[in-house]
Length: 320
Image (cartoon, rainbow, N blue to C red; front, top):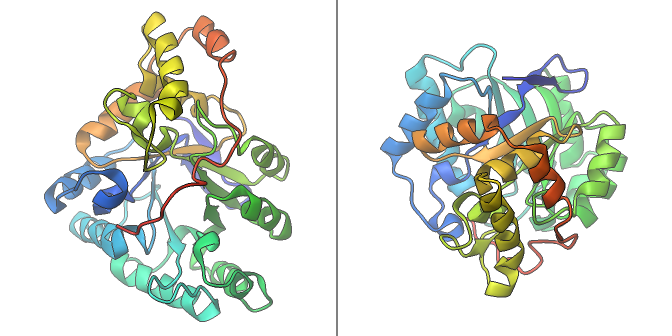
């Protein structure tokens, strides 16, 4: 699988990466549970490649995601060579505080849970949900701590991972990040992140585009999955997905393949992160990534409408 460089860090990431929020089992968000045994089989399959990056977070499934990955790393005899492990500095879920001390505490919790001494990539995560953004951005705040961890050699690349672009874009301009993650805002049905991606690309910040399936609807189809970005969707909100699906059927292209390759083919994007919860989901993503899609299809869907608005404006956030 094609690999792309992450700025000047020496790291190279495959164009497809796997995310693990749902792997920790978050039924409130994703609508289904993931048993431990299924998660371990999924992780064992990941270790076989060809995808080389796994992304997690201290707070995914209230720590369960990292716990399951840590168990898999231990059983595997360590983290595989030439694979990249990514995690995040997270707020305290009880107090919502994400200051310098919490950032360091979060990182130490991650290392212990993951059974590793360092990580390849470390993000500051979801500042829009923190109690006080100034705890993050002030001198000697959580962001300074992120870069200090890199200086200590405990992470090779650092970045910011979040959703809300009105908060994220200014932060990108204020800090010298190696990498960034944004989710749900550059998909077939939503392009809110487009201008921000132009900027990040111009600054050589590696762009990880997460959630290309808009929370699942572009993978499972609007008849089978009536949610968009983790919220129940009305028929009116599902209409854009149905329009893309019509063109897919006309050209005999799977909707999931179109959604994934829309991100993969964008030259600005360093890697596309897809959530996986089973061996079958890994294989399906690999199949979709390699599917042949004719130029006529892309020409036709380029004429379809999409949103530039925040797709999570009405989201009620839950941690489970």
